[in-house]
Image (cartoon, rainbow, N blue to C red; front, side):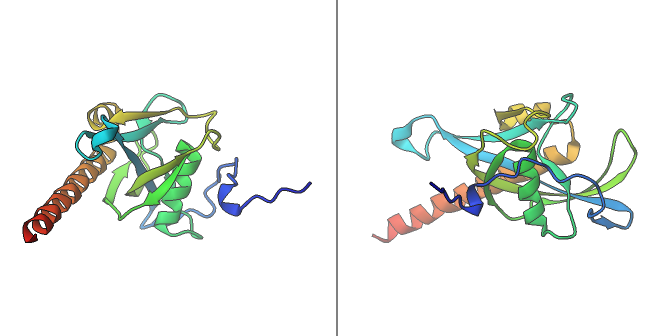
Length: 185
């Protein structure tokens, strides 16, 4: 008996490696990443009232630092495609990549290399049991305060702050729309 598997359900268990296809701009390596997030409801009966935002952080390959998934943007990908690929490879999650949080310039602490980084929110829809870098990295869901504390890269903390502000703004806009719709009747 033959079983067909759709392309979307297959996970490549090998991460891209090497820097031959990496993008550079003015001597800076281009990197992209995501802040994977989800909402946890305290009370399933009243979704929306007691929701808590959680973000997914991962360990660095050597396991000494906590950060958000990110990696090289390659010449055959869009920024969003690269961010989604890196997040799946490093954190084992997939979902909806949303609008860019910003662009940052920073230097590597270890090598002194210059980077230009772009971060995107990723609303998680699927958490994989098996992913390419699971033997190198651990992942952990945390609330925003915990993530700010453990994340050691200033630019990622700033991206997290932008995400929180964006989500609060969206929630306020939704509440305003409900009030306007409610007052029409």
